[in-house]
Image (cartoon, rainbow, N blue to C red; front, side, top):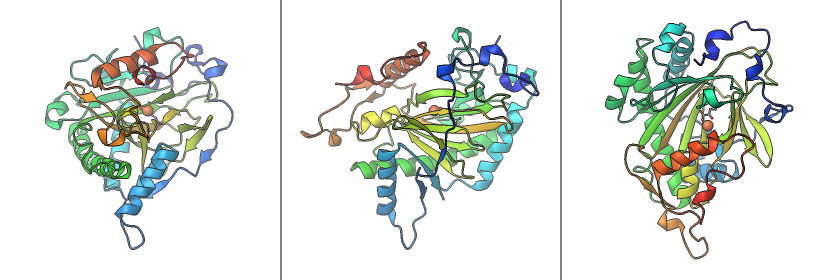
Amino acid sequence: MAQFVSSWSNGVQSVPKDYVMPPERRPGDFVSVCNDIPVIDLQENANTDRSDIIQQIHKACQEFGFFQVINHGVSEKMMEDMRVLYREFFNMSIDDKLGIFSETSSAASGCFLYTSGLNYHKEDVHYWKDTLRHPCHPLEERTPFWPEKPTRYREEVGRYAIEVRKMGFKILDLIAEGLGLNKGYFNEVGQGQAMAINHYPPCPDPSVAMGIDGHTDPYLITFLQQDQYGLQMHKDGKWLGVEPISNAFVVNIGYQLEIISNGKLKGAEHRAVTNLTAPRTSIATFFGPNLTLPVIVEPAKELVTSTSPQMFKAYQYNNFIADYLAYYRKPLPRSGTPLDSYRL
Ligand SMILES: O=C(O)CCC(=O)C(=O)O
Ligand SMILES: [Fe+2]
């Protein structure tokens, strides 16, 4: 049975050999933290009105597919409570963790705790992380399947999910307007909400281990809270570090937004590395189509014109997710991207 890194790695002096990446999959040379990734203040003031914020977000989405937001409406106390709660969660005893352990994502509740990637037994080498994932919407239907420990889990995470949802739709509205779509355009297609909490314990040799390989999220958009450095984005053939800013959310674009925007925005590739001394926990919230409904996704009609012909075909979202997972289960190096079979 797969063993949580958070349960055995404390005090280990070297990286076990089944966690040592082959040279071509290691984090590589020094990666600098990039201060150019835009930090966008969502609060309107005397110098910045809503249309300025729309423009800033649109530019960041086009140039980076990544930005950070401050003054986003989610309280600092709530963000801090989440950091404390998840620190406690990953420090729980192995027995408590095993109660919610699942080898696969097929658990009917959608709530599962796993270690490394989604495919531990088929991996030739493992990732230095444990992950808890669960859906968050509709909240009343989902919370009964969430972890029962720490005992405040359902209440606190439930409140956080509501606040992040408000921020999420506020930002999706700003993105819609930047694209020339109606405010509210993403209300329907962004209904699905899920969280992934990734925990990367300190690693005795971060140069040979990997937290999570380069990937683009399959959803519309991701909001991530990080307590330590570790997230890197891929731009112009290089990896750039995303600076942790306390109480900011890192926002990145997923494949559904690339497709709906008819290629005007690009899904942002990213990965996470480990570090020597500090445990790192990233708390990600994703918005995208509801997986339990037969949602059809296609480029927005308003963005398909004679000068900008339709770039992607229409498809059923759960078929996309199945293809996406199959792509990332293929051994490295992989050719193409999960979008290739959707291009026209
Ligand atoms: O830990 C991070 O910073 C990245 C996590 C991530 O990319 C994901 O959960 O999709
Ligand atoms: Fe991701």
